[in-house]
Image (cartoon, rainbow, N blue to C red; front, side, top):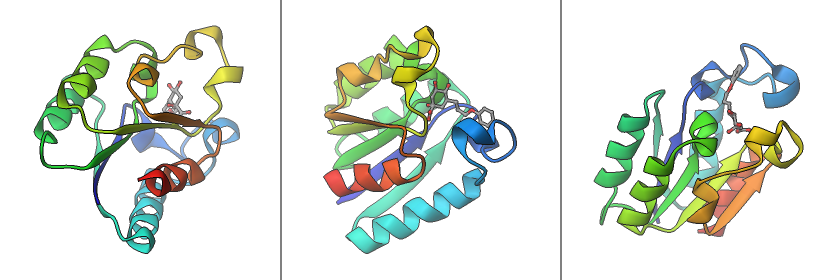
Length: 138
Ligand code: CA2
């Protein structure tokens, strides 16, 4: 299957700070991990990371009729972005939401996810392995 993996703001900073929450591996290590999982599973994967809400929305719109699935970690936009939720609803592509940390046991403001309203499944707290589980679901 053709899967688009989208990572939101600050995930490019992985490994630099807060290793207790997000682990000590870098974003580039995450990209390599996702590519290797996708290849094992026989998926064709495209990776996209942006710190900009509009760029994430543009990428979701461009995926229309071009991808079979989306794996998204919207990062901080998880808790704020009705616009990313609307874009995912608009394209109608099956979506799995991933979070490195377990957002259900952190600050109250992280407990609500707009993207969860459209995601087929939300995977939290498994670190990098969450992306593998998401790819396995497709
Ligand atoms: O647990 C996750 O994957 C999050 O989506 C990560 C976001 C956070 O805002 C969400 O609530 C949960 C943060 C992305 C990366 O943040 C960093 C902060 C410091 C150093 C490196 C990355």
